[in-house]
Image (tube, rainbow, N blue to C red; front, side, top):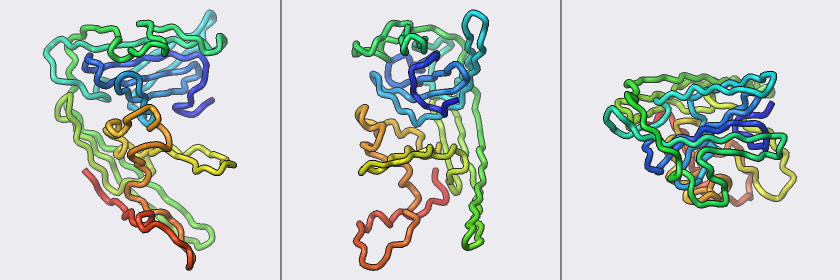
Length: 257
């Protein structure tokens, strides 16, 4: 009953993949009993970027003596370096047990008390993996009705993704909006600190891992806040209120490659 990327100690199964097999970058894909999903992109050694929402799927099934899980992970969701007929890809598997307080077993065994993670994934040789060229469109629309002024604001747009080779991706967006993502979580903030909402527009999240310079950049401490791209604050300042000019200088974005 939890939303995507909610982290709790419960029954779950994790598959982490190192596509180049060199410990440079990877993907963590978790499915929990009840079909709630968690995924993240990986950078060495154990830096997780939870803003990834990959195009994979998974299902679980409760059985009389336990439960089973099945993954569908398309190779097209991840960049693959150029290779011959045989690829070297790293895999990591983990099983977490909820009724044991989140105790987990993994292969290879990589507890958080050791420094190694991605570089220690088990290496497998896979043949004939060459995703085809793909051209994908994700159109979206949104509409907002203002009940007081009786005004309607409607928007339409699309994200475009073209993968000419297995290790390259060209993306573009027209009138990027929040129509392709889920709503923000409802947060009641009774503290003196601002609430941080992560960016969710797919186009602006592509490749932003390079700005995550430490594990502390997964929250408010970050070099890049994608929510501030293309959207100025929507409020009117009364006379006599001081503000920083850059806070009101973000123009809207209608298209981007």
